[in-house]
Length: 311
Image: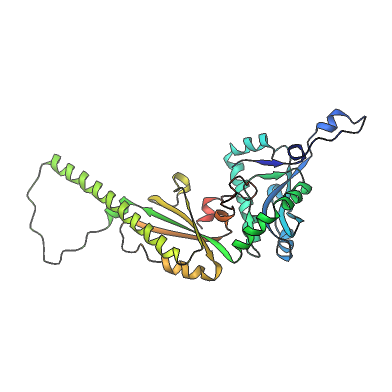
């Protein structure tokens, strides 16, 4: 996550200043900048949503519109959300979490009423005039993205492998009566057998999880318009026990969301050490960029807090 500060200093030649204007005033930064959360089509959806939303630093969310598009913005301190200011905030986990949570809340609240393109965290412009200029310059791109995403939502699917859970799963009962007693073995040999059994259980759990992940993709392909494979989550980002081996997002028509859930429900039942987690629906964070415009920053995805995306 990086800060993106845009404005006349980077986009236009400098203009001569009026004679007699003090140097301090000429070089001073504006007291606030415009933080952009999402972009949608101009109209009642975002116009109605904006007054009900609270942005960063308890700022009121407002709209900035141009060429049939509307951006949800709020004012933030210019120094705090400058390039240098954002570097400091990125090093503070508490501040970073608050930015991500607020950004996510604004985007998801707007998404309940209309289609939106989530913006990257800390996308900041000098003022609303520069936001409107950005909308005009990229109107065709944004219009195409919105047309593609209308009537769709994002669902997240994670597959976990948990060898410990697999090892704890009771073995099936024998059907032909009790097995004959095994001959006694030395403690060292018994230890080696246990190690081999644990390794085999681990391999089996990962193979089974891989097979379940393949089945998820096969079933989802018939219901989703698109798929994005994310890096598996690790550490605090991974929810629950086991290792996240597949972390994917699917763009699903809103009228097929329940069908998608039903298709994956129970897929890992009876498979020791494997579980599936389906989250959403979310705003289309993973699909808000055009594959043909890799250099575009204004539509880059913003990842919401892990605990909210897995709720």
